[in-house]
Length: 364
Image (cartoon, rainbow, N blue to C red; front, side, top):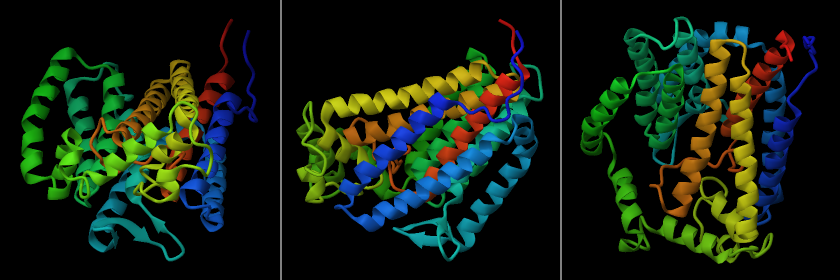
C-alpha cells in the first residue's frame, strides 16, 4: 500500500523527546545558575528560537539540502577564516564573531556543514567509494578541523572531524584503509602532542590519570565533578538542593559540567532517565537513516545520529573522569545559543528525511 504525501507530517516521537530534554534543561539550568531568573529567560529564548529553526528545516527537502551542501560548506570555511583574523576573543580563545546583539560561533555550524559536504561527495559515486573520493572526503574534514583547532578549540575540532569521519565510515571502507588510518594516527598523535597541543591541553590529558596530583589546579574540575556525581547517590539530593552546585564548587556548571549538577540533584535514577532519552534520539535517528530513500539522506541521517551519540558520550565521560576535559557541552542541556541552534538544525534535518521517506511511499 502506498503512503501518500503528507506535507504536515512531523516525527512526533523524535519531537516529543527533544521537547522533554529542552524542558529538563531549563529545570537544571535554573539550579545551576543559582536560581537566576534572567538566565532562565535567556535560555528560554535560545530554546524557542532554536525550535523555530528546527521546524523550518523540517520543511526543507533532502534534495535541496544536497544541492546546498557545497555552498554551506564554503560559507562555513569563510567564516572560520574570518574568526582567525577579526574574531572576538574570550577566555584566551578566538572563536566568535561579534554581531553586536549576540555572538556567533562558526565552528558550531561546521558540525552540520561537514557531514553534509562529505555525504554529498561520496553519494555521487557507487558505494563503497573509491580511494580518490575517500581521500577527497578526508581533506574536506581536515581543513575545517585544522582551522578550529587553531582558534584554539580542540574539543569542537575533534567533534567536527568525528562528524565527517563517521559519514566516510558509513559509506563503506575496506579494513585495509581502516588499518592504514589507525597507523597514521599512531604517527600523527605524538606529533600533535609536541607541536599542536598547548600546555594547558597537555595538562588536561595528564590530569585524567591522576587528578589529585594538582587538586587545586588542573585537577580541580574533575575532582569537584566526581564528588558531585557520587554524592547524588541513587535518588539524588533533590532539585535546588545540590551542595556542590549551590555552593558553586563545580566549575562551568551551567555549560560543560552541567551533567554533574544534574547527577547530584537527581541521582542515579535521574541519570538513567536522561541516558534513555538520549539513546532514544540516537536509535530514532538511525531508524530514519535506515528508511531513507537515497544515499545522501541515508549517510547524512546516520552521520548526524552517530555523532550525536559521541557528543553525549564524550561530555559525560569527561565530567565523570574517564575522558580528558576538552570543553564539549552536553547536548540540549548545556547553556549556549549557537550550540542549541546547531543541534536543532540537525534534528530538523532528521525530521525532513523522515518526512521525505514517508512521502515517497512504501509497500507493505
